[in-house]
Image 1: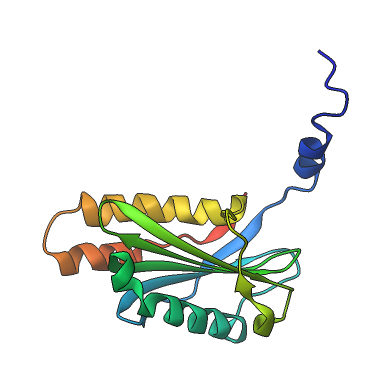
Image 2: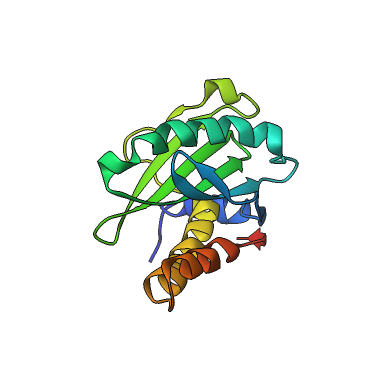
Length: 166
């Protein structure tokens, strides 16, 4: 079957695909939530405290209204220094086995220009890898875990992803 170039964009994407570094940035208490922040770094980019600070401020504003969205008080923050710009994602576990996701985007190195992502914007492949780990961690330690809530939450907080994701 001749694709007539139908899949050229997919092949171009595959040729440019590479690993990105992911590292935890240390659990935080933000707006009444236990938050596991991560940095995701495209080649040549880094996420340090200076890059994380604006993301933490966005997360605080978003999480402050969490109880109105049914938040359970547990969240994951992704600070992604991407190849084409910067991204901040706040993923919050909510009632009914659901979650809430907020995404901000902006030009690289311009945290003052971060704005809410367009309707329908979803995590990229690297962000999705971290969120998949976090979904498994939440299920394993919190939902299916044993013992008191404090022990389950401590196990969840300690279960972080670090290294390269593809």
